[in-house]
Length: 55
Image 1 (tube, rainbow, N blue to C red):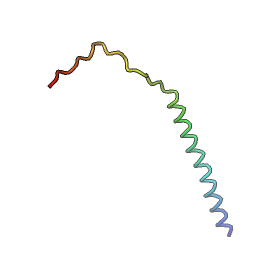
Image 2: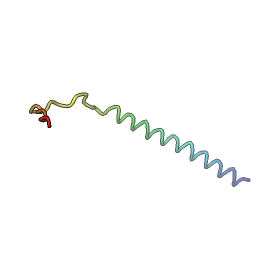
Image 3: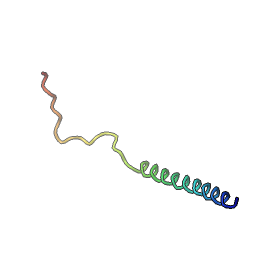
Image 4: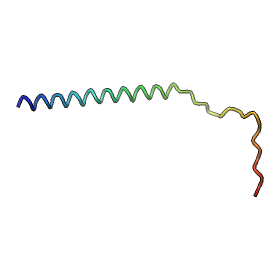
């Protein structure tokens, strides 16, 4: 009986700690994405793009 309680307690503790670790990794990744600067428009190219000739 003691063994079953010990195993169950270890499983619950592992689940709680694992969930917390995964949550922190997810929050850290969200912060990283939030701080990434993405340009809304691409930078102007040095030469204009020429239209393709009609086939």
